[in-house]
Amino acid sequence: MDATRIIVAAAIALASASVAHAADAPPGAASCSGCHAASASVQTPVPPLNGRPAADTVSQMAEFKSGARKGTIMDRIAKGFTEDETRAIATWYEQQK
Ligand code: HEC
Image 1 (cartoon, rainbow, N blue to C red):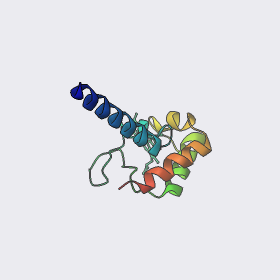
Image 2 (tube, rainbow, N blue to C red):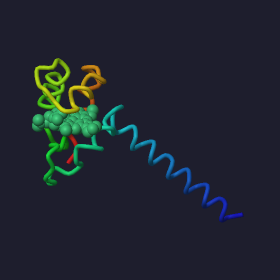
Image 3 (tube, helix red, strand yellow):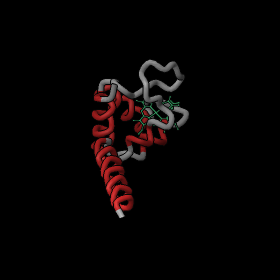
């Protein structure tokens, strides 16, 4: 039953790889990339978050949250995150290339 063993080993390797990847990104970060392009070189109306200074993302999110800056959608999204969560997400995106 060597084939079974190989399949089981592969499944475990895959599972741990995806767990490790999920642990990389803080909670909520994956939800941003549905709209914000993953690559900084892509031209879209929604600015990429990758490589963006964390302080900048945090202050924009705070402005959306408080209503100081109007958005079509970000005002509502920003309200869903605490300051700590926003900072963790912003710091993570700053490190993405
Ligand atoms: C449903 C699509 C969508 C999702 C999901 C989304 N965004 Fe946005 N984001 C936008 C749009 C559209 C704008 C432009 C402002 C507006 O219309 O609300 C924007 C603008 C921004 C800006 C301001 C950028 C600038 O240069 O003005 C920041 C910062 C930002 N988003 C961060 C985030 C973060 C962090 C997340 C995840 C927690 C996120 N966004 C999730 C659509 C989205």
